[in-house]
Length: 299
Image (cartoon, rainbow, N blue to C red; front, top):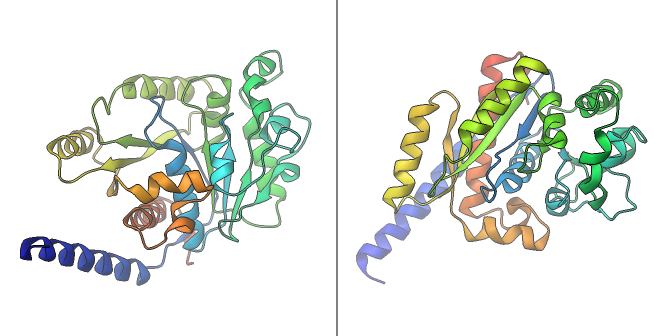
């Protein structure tokens, strides 16, 4: 290794140490009212589910009680959180059809004691068709979630809803149930492709079904500071969405990519990795931003 390479490695390690110390010295405020956040991007492969589970895990590690609702028939969020989602398991499918309550479906995650999950099962793949004929088909998740949060003996500070990449009744249910939308955007070619359509769909939901819904957060993922492209995408996103885009960015990381194949979040898989650190920083920033707009109590 050359002197220049050694210096770069040393600077990188020193930067990680500084960032970890800064996180350790800050306390993330807990919201007095549950923040319900749908994580959505109609473009596939942007790290939507990865972002959902890793932010949820990070907030749980920073003292919050967190519930993840897996609304994607693939069930990848359930897998990452260590929650069984075989076809016979009580799941969000049963909740949407009105056959069970969320309290019947919620399971503790193996990732952290503060983290819980309402799993998806393969049954959810047919739910789009089954929901069409049901009364208040767009409101079913919101109604069930309101009941659960009102009756739960455990106060939940955050609910994250992971929805499929397409806009159907499952995603509409997620938008109607939430107050906030978090959009992960990858720092690669065509990053903003489909974003205008997503924002248009959110405006339709605001107009007709959920006037309180807002895009609160944009998180840049798969960032590689060595490439001009990543820097250009980040600059463009920040110019278009200065208030919504987090300062924290998630770098392209082997550990973040590997963790799902082991059925884990990056925090459980390798908590010392740069990817885990980035999601902890993003989670802290989300908590701080919420404190600026909502009453809160200290962690």
